[in-house]
Structures are given as structure tokens and as C-alpha cells.
Length: 178
Image (cartoon, rainbow, N blue to C red; front, side):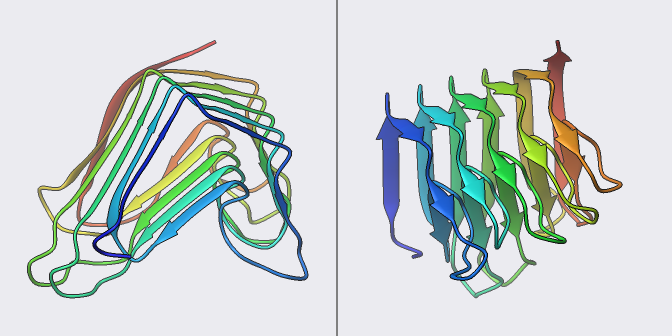
């Protein structure tokens, strides 16, 4: 929720799954409704989401007045995470801000991570490694820098590494492939 401050450091998230019957987002971690999420030096391996977005991790900030959000992911490894349901996004990460509302702020920083062999398996799925939708507001920036992408795939039309959705905000970054 909006006042939550959640931090994971040096954790391992292995072989977690959300079934297509039960539904939900984020195969290992899901945070909805705002607040700050910090993930540092963690490993996400073989997590699967059969019913929503974010094979390993999903963050959603709704358009609600005065709710703020922040996502910081640094020094993590995302290996072989997947989404298998139809028309979902982010084999490893799905980070979405719904739209701007009065008094909101939102920051995203994804830096110095490794994304290996993550996949979005079904037609209509996008972003083998990361999907970010910054529908928030002009001037808000999602920073994605110094990450390594290798072997990520998407069955849909979006890119295999990083897919950026429509919105007023900006996504900027410089990362290495391979």
C-alpha cells in the first residue's frame, strides 16, 4: 500500500509460481498501490506467472491522489523467469504507473542487474526481461542503466530485452546486451 516501505537485500527467490487458475501478478514479489520497493543484490531464479504480469516481480502504482511510488532494483540477477499466460508483460519485471493524479510522484531506478534467459511465452506477451509503463506524468523518469541482457525472449511483438509502454513520462537508459 501507499505507506509501505519494503526492502529485500541478499535474498534468493527460487521456483515460485502463480497458477493460471488462482491468478495474480509477480511470480515471486508483487507490490500494488504505491509505496517504496527496494531490491538489492538478490537472485530471482525459475519464477513463473501463469496468470498475470511479472514472472519474477510486479509493481503497480494506481492513479490515486497523493499516492507516491518508488522502485529501486540494483545488483540483482534474474535468470529463467517467465510469464506463460496470454497478453501479459515482463518475463522478469513488470513496472507500471497507471496515470497521473494530483500530488503523486514516482521514481524508477533499475541499475547494475543481469537478465539471463527470461521469457514471455505466449503471443501477445511482451518484454522478455523488462516491461515498464510510465503513464505517470511528464518529467518523471524511469532510469534503466548498466544492466546486462542475454538470451531473453518474447513471443509477442514487443522486444525481447526491454519493452517500454506508452505514457507521458520518460524512460531513459544505457545497458549492454551480451
